[in-house]
Structures are given as structure tokens and as C-alpha cells.
Image (cartoon, rainbow, N blue to C red):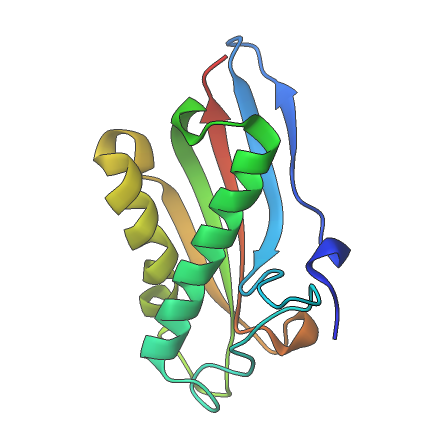
Amino acid sequence: MASAMDFPRGRSFSDSSSAFVMWTTPSCCGTASAADGSLAGPFGKVGAELTVEEGYRAARLVALSMLASIKRSIGDLDRVRRWHRVFGMVNSAPGFAQQPSVINGFSDLILELYGPARGAHTRSAVGMAELPLHMPVEIEAELSLLS
């Protein structure tokens, strides 16, 4: 089993508006929750091994994992000025076409925490034939930070 440390955490850089833009590299659900640092589930394809509801919960776990990573990076989640773009990938069984319902798990949590002014974002939700380590959801996000 891979360790959560095998996945890049994120990086930030200055933009021309003097705020920072952070692009979080793909974040998978279940980071380092086990005592040994291994990834926790669920694992599998949505529409086969996992239901839409289980996929939705996995996407919420991705959001929590990403927020924890961002907090480690910037120290205070109140520094998030705005969420801009989310790219959600769902490990999909053949014929599964409810990827937006799965990625809603991520978007709903961000909107609950940040409200529409800061949390509303553009989004793509796509199906993938496979994701690393049989993870059901992988998400990339772009957000801006207050200086």
C-alpha cells in the first residue's frame, strides 16, 4: 500500500495581483489516516464496487484531505480568498455517467465552508477508466490566497 507521502502536496506562486494562487496537485481520498501512514479506502470503481453515494462521500474525504494539505502549507484556511477551478476525476465503471453527482461531494463541502462568494468555482467532472491505486476520486483545484 502506498503512503500518503507518495503524493505531492501542492505548490504556490505569486500572480500579478499580489495575492497568491495555489494549485493543489491531485489529491486522493483517505490520506494517511492509518497509523502506518497507508492510504485508507474506499477503493474501486464508482458504478461497480461503489455506489454514487459512496463516491460522493469519497469526494468529501478528498476535500477534507485537500483542506488539511492547504492548512499545512499556508497555516490558516481563512487565508483562502477564493476557490476558482476544480477538476474532478471519477474512477468509473463502463457505462457510468453520474460523475457530476460524485464530485458534488467535494463542491458541496467547499460551498458549505466558504459560502458562495468564496467557495463557488468552475468545475469539470469526468470519468476515468482507472485511477492510481484504485482510488475512486482524484481532484485538482486552483484557489487564490490573501497575502
